[in-house]
Image (cartoon, rainbow, N blue to C red; front, side, top):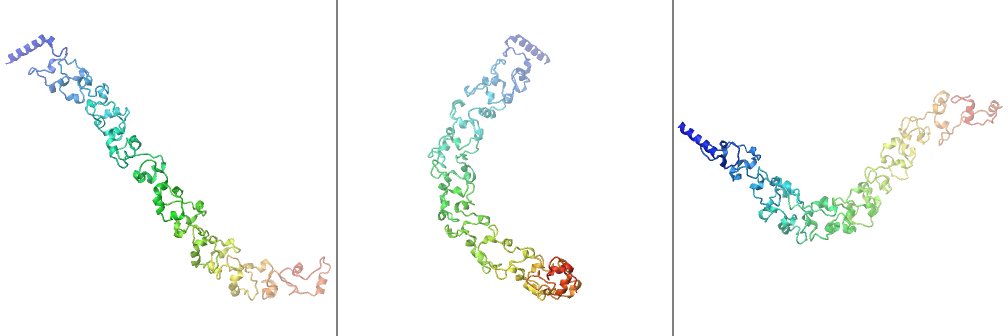
Length: 488
């Protein structure tokens, strides 16, 4: 058996050598045993150890899994092209150029990522939904996928949507071209139109969220941009205030804004010559314009606040005959509490007067009230016993001894301010102030000689030779007699 095999091998080698000039693969400089075996002349591609990279053409992607004869249909392996078109029929008929690898790859013949990248360099970039759409969706009815000369206008592909649209009806409104004015190629939905109006207010605020038919009820041409043209029903139905009764202008933007219809800002000063300040700026129109009254409205506080004026009891404005000029005490910002500035009157409130209630003084009203202390403090004057003001015939000008800060601790200091009457010999010489102050209406008038009268002759002798003619007044007595001492 071994002998037979040896003979066959020798014959096989001889045959190869003999037929080398007739090798069907041509001048292929590789060992036949890399592909063929002695068991069978047939080639098992899966078991072939041949490295195709040695030929300069790498077997990548799908090429790794095809049968050798799929490409090498001729046994002359060296005589085969390496371009894609050598094996793959160009269904584009050369219109996209010879470089198939710009769109296809050996990894996957259907991989189109490169196609989209290439398409974006054309006159029609693939954006939005277009980026995930099959080529055949646009390149329809074209023999052999001939992509050249495909229209790029939207209507070519979207004619069906154009005809079917009713909100708005594009055909009736003549909206049959330039779809990109409303529809964006980057959008993910055809139904979400993004038409930009020439009027800026339509692109912002509540208008930007409205459906087209909210304003375009009849057509899309020659529609007015005036607010009233759309908001006439709002104007006519408004009751606070009633726009018709008030005769408001139909120029809505005088009070409203396109961002917010509510909370109108009417310029009351400009339109009605009456500024709305303080609390007036936040109240409803109907609170002053009752029953939508527009004309003959009062402009003074009392005209609107008469009921407040008559109902107040602390203090009672009517009983006290208060002035109707409410702003003397109140402000437009805060009606209560009042801020009457008493210091602007003839009697400023200082000291203890600043903290007492109005009715403590104004017990009988607010008009013709005396401003002297005694008119309010007569009771204190009569009841005081140390000293007894009434018995001592004290003047009723309380401010001579008292202050507005405190009634107690009167500051009358006769000894230091004038001369001692509570020390020295005078302390036993008087019972009441009137003993010396004979004019109780003016305690600045007093006389020494009413108590210390001299005989005229003695006085003349004593003062004989003085320059001035001596008169019997108190000031002259002080020239010789120190204050507080008695002269016998």
